[in-house]
Image (cartoon, rainbow over all chains, first blue to last red; front, side):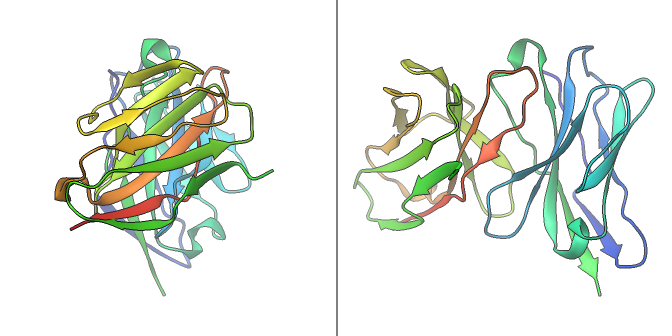
Length: 111
Length: 113
């Protein structure tokens, strides 16, 4: 199964955007890269996904490396207002129904 | 459009009791999932279903059972509750299309004492 690796925690402040890395060196050609965030006491919510090209939506930007072995999520300022856990997972391939999440990256926001 | 609805929100069980966690979705999604999340940890897949009448085990199925008699409902049954099943349980669903996003419910917080 293609797996992802994320740092356990990162800090952000209101002045600078935080860049959340995700390593997926065993990604296959048909895998989508998905990002979700989980606010305290809530279920995860979808943020963004991409296949090969960089993607942008109202919540975040997703930059995908040319070799697709890593990606970086850049939440927009409004999205970053609250501390949350961000999960990076791979979707697609022969295992698209069995979806596993790792521990994600816990982002804390400095005032 | 309610999305994915889980009931109850909270429950306390005594060891050995049984209960059913309810999950229903109104988006006509074939794929549905049950996850558990222990404090400070990620989500672990318990069971999943690819359509009515079809279910399969995830990473941590022991102590749980599921059924899927309709597209909308995917209940999770705990037969003999144990303290190790104290956790937050999330249900999710998604459409069939390749790489489609998951939609999560708000979870059921279960304590077994």
